[in-house]
Length: 111
Length: 114
Image 1 (cartoon, rainbow over the protein chains, first blue to last red):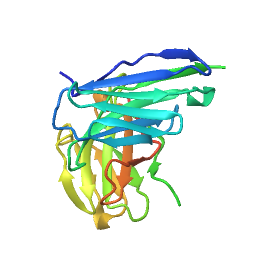
Image 2: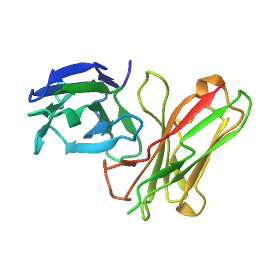
Image 3: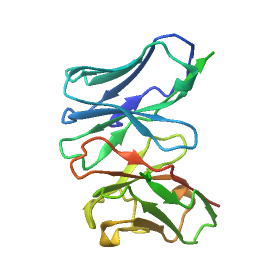
Image 4: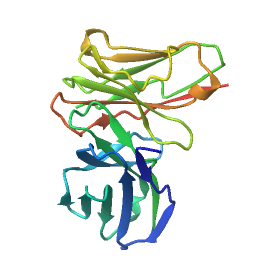
C-alpha cells in the first residue's frame, strides 16, 4: 500500500470554477502536510503548508486537513488558466527527514 | 537570490555508463535532499543531508548510487553503472535547518538510460 494516494486526474475545469484536490494517507504519524504546484519541466514549488487538523487559507487557496480520516484537501477558488499545473500533496513526520509525495493531480483550467 | 540549480538538465547515457548529477542548493540552506520521479510514479525520497552529514539515506535504491556533499555546500549524485530502470527525473531540494516543510526544488535533472 502506498503511503500517500492521490488521484492523477487529469482534471479539466472552466475558468472561475472551484477546484477540489484530495489526498489520503495511511501513516497516522504524519504531522505536516504540504501542497506543491509543479509546472511542466519545472521543479515543484510550495503552495501551502499546514500542521495538524483544520483549515488554512491563503488568497484563493484553502488547505484542509482531517487527521481522523487521514484526508487532506486543497481548494482553489475562482480558478485561472495560470493555475493549470500538476498539484502534489506531500507529508512529513515531525523531523522533516523525509517527505512522502502523492503522484500528483494534473489540472487544466480552460479560458 | 539564486534558487536551487541542477546540472545537467538532461543526460542521455547507455546502460553500464556512469553519470554524475550536481546540485547547488540555496546559499545558507543546511538541508539538502535528493528525490527521484520515474515515469508515471510519485516523487520518491532518496536521501537527506544536513550540512555534510547524511541524515537519512534509506531511499537510495542500491549501492550503484552514491551521494556526496563535501563541505556542506553543493552535492553530487553518481550512478555507476547505470541501468535502464534508473531513468527518470532527479530532483534536488534544499531548506533552512529549521525550515520545516518549505522545500525549495531545482528544476530537476532528466536521466535517460538507453
